[in-house]
Image (cartoon, rainbow, N blue to C red; front, top):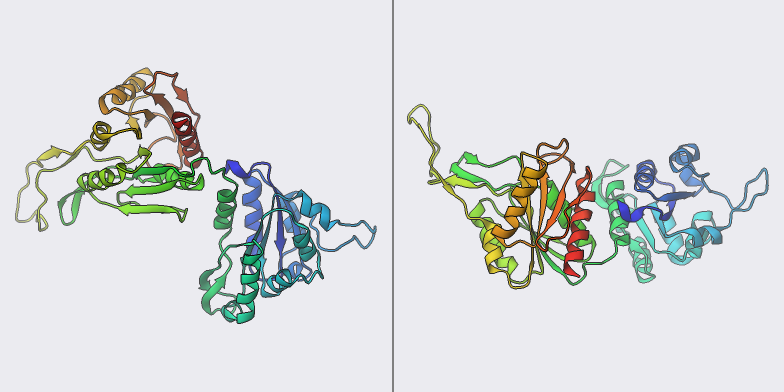
Length: 404
């Protein structure tokens, strides 16, 4: 989460059971490189202690306008000016009402009223309170005032009822902030990405495929959307999901289905990133019923070549930037040579090379280690082992250079 590094985040915590989630949110923000100043309401301290919050944030927790023993004044104005963003999580019905109507009777509300930065509110309350007209009216007022509302989930609540009012999970709140602070350097760009494996049927229950999980392609799609791109993600069968709501996912199964979807999207895109691990071969014939080993001897499986999607698009491109992937089982110069050969053969503008011989790279991992190669002959760029989210940033940074 590079875009939160060095950011000053004021985290306002009000008095609700969801305050326990704030501890996780602080840890995630600090891990992302942000500085966190907690401002808590008096009722908030009934649900989570300042000692816990201070230990996680590394800063004293602010609750009162001044420290009783010393008279030290806590300036809500200074805190509001310090912040790059203010997040109120959890935000109870009472706190939301006070924010909407300017009732400045605690440190959290006065800090909000002094804040010059963007403000994010994550409501948390029981379903009837969430649905009450006064709550809806107060949230509408905050939206009109420019406050970003992080909508609550539907789930089990403190009352043990199930409904809308459960505070959004800390990981998703972090993602909202990351999206907000990501520079929109790809605004106006239309990006097509393929991801995951393809599945080539032998019969209704068996298939030929590979070990791709789609994590790399999905990470690229989410990061491109954060940067403001219009993203179409053509995905084979995977268990991961796009986290950014602006990513349009087109589900396919086979290589031929992926080719058709890619051709449809390619005509109107600016950048195409071929991150899918397309099966090179498919059974010559897919049986319509299950092959029964008790009744039928299968001595061999006849395979035919699947279409080369990247090469097909390479022949059709008229100004689009086409980026391929080259996964090898070797590393070093020989693997690089194989990847460079793909550039010319498939008419690519750039290739992302990685090797299964490098620990932590390739299928199924949360990390990757890549080398970027260009068609214009510039020097290869080797990137160290890092999370696939950070690798996605490296790839898109290079694509932005390519498009300049």
